Amino acid sequence: MKFVVDTNILFSFFRKDSLIKKILESPSCTFHSPFLALKEIEKYSPLIISKTGLSKKDFLSEFKNLKSSVKFHKEKNYKNYVKISEEISPDKDDAEFFALCLVLNLPLWSNDKILKNQGKVVVCNTEEIINSYFG
Image 1 (cartoon, helix red, strand yellow):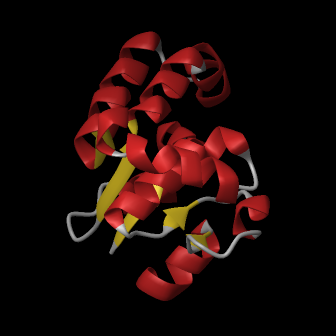
Image 2 (cartoon, one colour):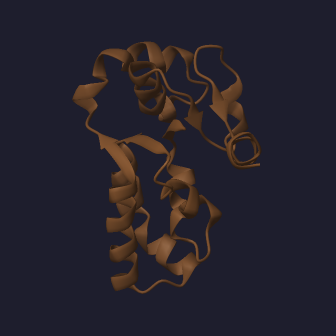
């Protein structure tokens, strides 16, 4: 199983006993995300720490684990697809995720329903992934 993963899914990695964390750490799966996602996680780290109850030290440890579980791509790897992705993405903030999907020819894992409102990239939510691959 291979997917590009959006930031909101990655935020769930930090929850205690997270099923998403178990999926992302599965050795039989490969996950990708734009480097932008790491910046968003760093930006929202105080909120993540607050909501999860993690200490700063534990957050940093989990952040390191996340970086080992997901391959993060620099924009140079998909920049030629950003313009077309801005046109097809129902949410312009997700254009880099769509661009990476197009470059890698992979579906997007996202629980954002609006992202399904286009016809170029397959978008699967967590329930669909669990039912299709782990059910």
